[in-house]
Structure formats: C-alpha cells, structure tokens
Length: 432
Image 1 (cartoon, rainbow, N blue to C red):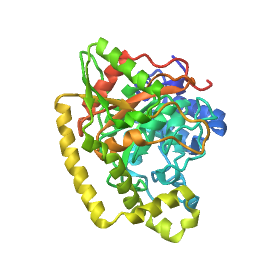
Image 2: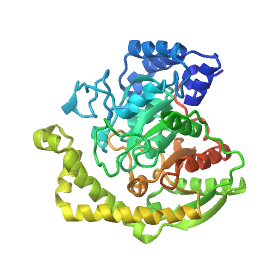
Image 3: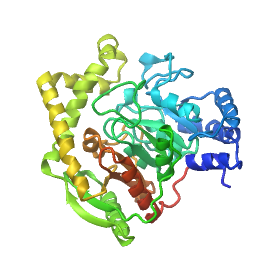
Image 4: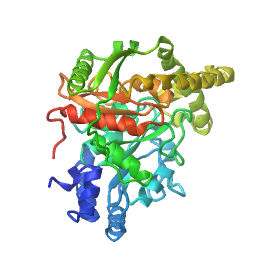
C-alpha cells in the first residue's frame, strides 16, 4: 500500500474499515508530512498534533461511520472552537469562536478528524495568503482557497473545506493539480462561515480525485458512497463563450483534446454557445459582490479600514456606487436566469468549460483571475474542476464540468466517467 498520507479520503476510510490501517496511523502520517513541508508551503496556519491524535484515538474504537478516521483541514474562513479563526486578516488575530461552523461540526460528527486550519485570502477575497504552490513554490496556489489546495496537493491532508464566491475553489485546485468541487449552492451548510457575498458564497471541498468529491460530500450527509461511472455515457455540452478569449491557447487546446477523448470513449459531445444574455452576468456578479461585501464587512470597513489590504479597501469602496434599486433588480434578474439555465440540462448532463486561464502564475502577489467561475457561481450551479494535462511550463492545465442545480450526483457521475477516460497529467506531484 502507498504511504498513508497519499491515500485519498475514500481509500483511508476503506483501509480503516478493513483493518489495514488505523486512524492514528493515518493522522500521524499526515502530521509528519505537515511537519516536513509546511515551513516551505505555508498551507497550514494552525495545527495541534496532540489534538489531532486525540481525535484519531477516539476514532479507533468508535462504531463505523461514513467518515470515520478520515483527516480533513478547514479553510480559515470557518469558525473552529479549538483553533484560532482569523479569516486571513490581522483584525482577527487570535480570535477564538465559541462553537464550530456547521460543516466542521458535521464532519466531526461523521467521524472525521480535524487536522487544523489552512490559509485563506483576506476574508476569502483576492488578496493572497502566505501559502505557495507545492508543485512549484515560486508560483501562486490560486486564491482564495489557497491553503486548502496546497495542503491537499502536498499530501498533508486528503480533503480540505474551501469556499467559492467567484472562482475560489475551481481555480486553486487546477493550479495545484488536484480536484475542486463547488456543490450546488447551499448543499453544504454555511453556518459559521464568515459571510462575504451571501447570495453567492458556496461551501465546497478540495480533494485529490473525483471519487473523493462524492465520498466526502455524501459522507457529510450520512451516506457511504463512492460514485461509479460504469455504463454511463454522459451528454456533454462543450460550452463556448466570449470568456474563452481570456483562456491561454494551451488551455483551449487541452479542453478540445479532452472533449475529443470523451467523445471517442462514448460520450455525446456537442458544442453549445452560451446565450449572450448570460455573458452579461459576469459584470453583474461583480456588482452584486461589491454591494454585499460592503454590508457583510461593514464592521471592519467602518471601524478598522486601515487594517484591510489596499486591494480590499478599493473593492469595498467600489460597492458604494451600487444602489439598493440596482442590487434588488440584480437579485431578481439572477433568479430569472437560474430558472432559464435549467433548460440546458434537458439536452446535456454537464457542460465542459475552462476552470482557469492557464497554468499557475509566477509570483505570489496575484492569485489569478476568477472569471471562469463567476457565471456558474451566480447561477448556483455545481461545478467540479480537474487537471487534464501539463501546460508548456510544466504545471497543470484543467477544465471544469458544470451540472444542473440540485443534480450533484449526476455531475459527479459524469465527472467520474471523465476521470476514467482522461489520463492524469504526468509527473506533477511535490517532493515526496
């Protein structure tokens, strides 16, 4: 068997239930990796080995449960009672909430073992964290779920909670060569998460393979389930839009090759042009964000603005130009567009779309553009991003599949089919 910290979440659970590994051994392997690599990668902002091992010890004798013994990490935008929750901001340095966020409490209740907190961009915005890309530490891991992606990619944890308000799950996952799953809006509880844009904020996970996206999410809801794609021949819409103008040529070519391979494997793949009126949602999404973020971060903006980054200050100031009439009209328009988007999935099981412009950017001051998540996040649709091949610079390129609202199992099954067809990109893992 491969090193325990290299196992995916469902493999960990399977090994524990078969008696081939213990929760303590798995957690210790993850902690050893954190100790070895976190000084370089800076994914974890807080980790207490004694607490993690104590939880693993309790899992040793616990009855079978959907996530028993599975280690997980939490983006530092979620409240945790036994770790500081700082939201990526100096304003909250040392802040200790009274209770766990809902998703953290549920994961623990289902048997998961919390390893600690991982880095987030400031209040889950585009101001980067200190985390770096473990595949190449001179490059960004993406944002704002930077620590989540870096920790999973570096074998520190098999799964990490993440959030997306524009593209903060799908992009970091691609940059770090792992899988990002943004479920349908509201599928995973957001209680105890620092709100940013409540009409769009979505809780999701970053994992190492597609099967884990299903396993862990279903496990949170009490089901033991690894999605299988046997016999499935999905109907895929290769979704084209003007946003493709921002995708690097290598990304476009990689997605075209992926579409061809899926068609050859038996999927039905047709080109689907995103209706023009949906293109306009990208600009509207930014206006909605600006208005809502001014409200959710009002205390920080009004009482401690100088402690906010210049980038976030500028974004919040921009929200002052959005009036209440524009905001309420935008909410109504978004609701109408969500209803219209349902019709697409009579013809398609999923849409295929870029997840990022290209490979991870050099440097750490910029975490990449989130534009390829903006429309789908506003529409509340589930998305799953995955690496497809290596780009010209040797770092991963990737795509995302988009499903119908509330039809997450359908999306996950189609993604499992895609994973069975598309070979993982070549050597992309960090030092082992």
